[in-house]
Length: 282
Ligand SMILES: [Zn+2]
Ligand SMILES: [Zn+2]
Image (cartoon, rainbow, N blue to C red; front, top):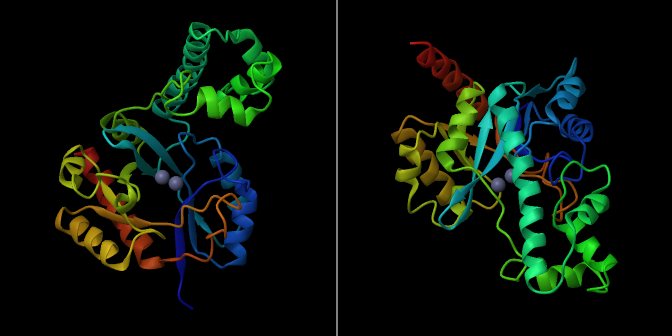
């Protein structure tokens, strides 16, 4: 029987709708051989996944997908074979947490300037036990203050991109994300380049930043784009990866187990990683 893998999956630890255990169950049901959970900016799902795959006929590659600053918006960089306990990933998590709090404070300042003051304390109260206060909690506070009738109105009038209370989210530079992944012992891979604005045009520049691989197999990549990305990866001696980017039930038909990447991709990736580690020691 031909074997398949999926190296790009999101769980409830970021914006997916399935827990890591549920993802492992589904991967087993669809007879995948290898998975990687690559949550946005967090490795918090890795311990549960390691537990869920123990004793099962399923390999697991610890992963992450880091959002980085990019002139056209955001560029996503995947990290594979990372040590989720590494200080460099803990550092990222601290920085993101601080930035989230600072974003709330700045949004409150801007709302005060336009005569709709919301106290940060009220936002924190709305966030309750959540350690990541954000725009939904600010929207809740605005409803509570009587400025808007609904959460949606708060976003539409004040908090969405381009509105007076909108504050951009902090993200690391691509170089910083690559360093974080390398310091955690992993390899850094450009995610979904064909559907990231400006990525194909500037792929040589991105490769120069020290990237180790390219995600070629991806549901929204057309066959000629997959081929082109594989050719680019080969010509630069880079790793090739692929996955469904499944978010559970949040984005229509879940692709986990439906969009499948050939097992050879994993075999080649493991060889690449072994060589990568050897080079690192020299
Ligand atoms: Zn992405
Ligand atoms: Zn993703």
